[in-house]
Image: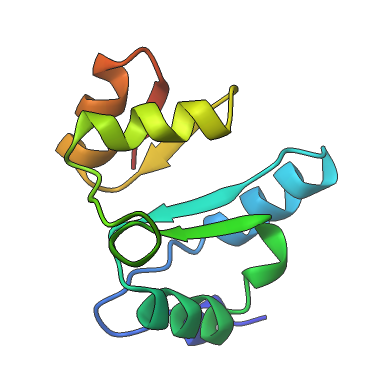
Length: 109
């Protein structure tokens, strides 16, 4: 599969992500999307990229919870729903600093 076809303007899809998602799924790792993007945008992007089957849940923070990731309470709420979390994201503050400040294992890509 030509992964460059999966990249959308304004929405980088890291070519290394697909084999990683496949491996994690094979090992039974539960995965979800936790995004500041709106529901229509997320749904369209996930479908167009073709990765919807990897995730058990897709959370659009503004549409589903009425909050954004910059708020520590967002991650506190996530921890109440999912007890084991390893967080991977592309925004240094929202996806790395905030969750790490709450004791969540977080990685910035």
